[in-house]
Length: 306
Image 1 (cartoon, rainbow, N blue to C red):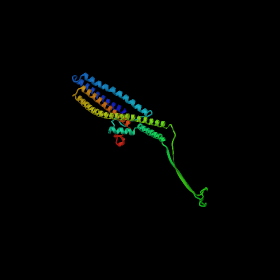
Image 2 (tube, rainbow, N blue to C red):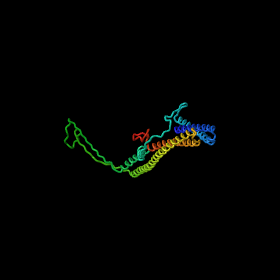
Image 3 (cartoon, rainbow, N blue to C red):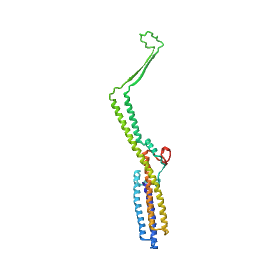
C-alpha cells in the first residue's frame, strides 16, 4: 500500500504540474488573442489543476499515515526511520503452472492438511490396536539347562538327584486370550472417530481445492486485467503528451488537454491499482497452496523463480 500511494502521489503531482503549465499557457493565449481561447477553456483547465492538487494532498495524507503505521509496527524509536528498497510498485514476475499442479501442492504442503492426515493415521493405528484384542496372543518359549563338573562322578542312577553334571531342556507353545467384554464398544468408538475424521478430510479437501481454484483463477484474471491496464496507461500517456504539445504550439484546444490528462491520470491510477491487485492475488495463491513464490518464475519446488 505504501508503494501504491507513492506511485499515485507522483502521478497526481505530475498531472498537477502539467495542468498548471497548461493554465498559464491558456492565460497567455487569452491575453494575446481573446478569440483564440475562451474563459470556459481556462475554467476547465483550472478545474483539473485544482482537483489534481486536492487529490495530491489527500494521497499525501494517506501515505504519511501508512508510513507512520509501519514505523510503529517496526518499533522504531523517535528519530528513526526507514527507506523502501523499491521505489515503484512492480508486478511480481510469476510463470503460472496448471491448476492441477497447485491442487496437488496444496494437499502436500498445507499444514492443516498434514495435521488432518496425521490424525487419521493415528486413529487408524488406534482402531487396529483395539481390533487386535479379538485375537489371541500366541507365543513360544523354551528352556535349556547344562552343567558339568569334571571332579564329580556322573550318576547313572535315574533315582538320584544329579546337581553337577546334567544337560536337558524343553520347549512349549502357548496362547493367551483377553476376556474383555467391552471390546466391541471400544472398537466401535475408534471406528466412529476414524469415520468422523475421514468425513472431515473429504469436506476439507473439497473446500481447500475450491479455495485453490478460486485463488488460481483470480491470479489469471488479474494478470489479464493488468495487461489491459498497462496498455491503457501507455496510450493515455501518449495521448496526453501529444495533446499538450499541440496545445503549446497553438494547434490544439484546451478541452483536449484537459480530457487527455484526465484519461491518462485515470488510466495510470487503474494500472497501479491493477498491479496491487495482481500482487495480492499471487500472495493469496501462495497462502492457499503453501507454495512460496521466489523472485521470478514458478513455484519453489521446481527450482524456478517466482
